[in-house]
Image (tube, rainbow over the protein chains, first blue to last red):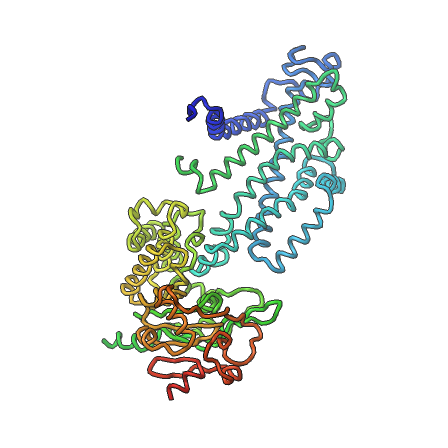
Length: 291
Length: 329
């Protein structure tokens, strides 16, 4: 019999269990830090993110009083990361939040009612699937005035079909459960049925899916910025910073890698929180029992 | 005495010529075709039949829960003289779970996994009796104790997945009787459970029915259940009633060949019994004549010509069979 502590699979088990408990905490702490810095940006003792100093062009990390170096125009990368967080986080969270609410509404209507309503909603959304996600966002952003709000609207619209599909499948499965019929048999009205039975049981997979999309949306948003449809230079979000840094990638990789790292970390944090959220919402998980 | 007498006379639930049909690609499926029965307070009626004989659809139609596309429900279902099939949806919502309750067949999925069981038992009380959260909870704990859940004070905060199938069925029953309904319809409440648990649930249903002095309609395919609990039995086949009688009479003097077949399968306990050959027909565009004739060893030409009507052969004993009418006369 293998030693329960020494055996590698057990060690892995401990590690994964530890991460299960610690991961969400680390993720939440990281996001809280980023959000705090982003909110406090105007009052922080940091350089003006738009202040270009040619002498500090592509300064390495730690040189010229720049903790994280300078970009290809000699702007303070740290300051730009903090100011960029404002836009990147807004683009990650706002469209996902709005799209999730809209999608839950549409998906539950389609999945629970079924029949013609299902067909109308889902076939209409199928039209959106004919376009690649980013292309559609570009088209929508192109019609409107370029800017952060446009970016958010465009991303919200392209997200709705994806999230609605998940919501509709989830609601459809819930709708066929005996407890829905039992609730009807005990005199529940349609409103109570949807709010107390369908929504709480159909929402968890949708929420988890939506949180994994938060990270992706930072990337899509940066794509829009890169094309000049989102954030307008010289202001920048993390995605635009990655694009800017690309010009000097071989001489100053940190100008690209640092904002890239922030995107990866934020995306990871969002999905870790999503997983924790799923567990918290699932009455079967131990987390809820012990807390 | 007079109140009791009038309660004895008036059936709580009086179903008249209930017909339910569904639209299918092959044609109209007549799931329930002219079913009539009535139940009085203090009585237990068992509806017996094979899968697909229309038992569950009958129950759903009474509570107006049939909502498949193209479904048609006709006839009358009188609850204390009011036709349930004519009530508005709001009136119906007020009756469901309050005056008429339904217990479902599958306890494993019958409870909402997102809420503690106590809250679900209390739901009907809050909805129909307007009890506050606290009062409803206290009553829910009483109900859970009544259906035999140990430690109800702490267990009522547990979630459905923390209970076994038998316990979940007890919880569902607690929710169904919460408002002390006049009519409790139980649709195969023991099918998904162990044999030992089945007996407990039946005992529970019977004792609750005696406490509440209400009418219990029990849908089952198990004649052992019928023998244990029923006052009256109604045998269904392919959407129609083939025989209806008080339990002792049906077990003593079964008349319809289908009832005889069911009873022989039950009495012999699976040892050398004669199974009824064949399968029940799917009731779409059935040819005229008795639906059972293809599986009946005594079928005659008359059976193919015309469907037998239900006829009384004795007090409270009706049967739909050409052969039996001949024998009784």
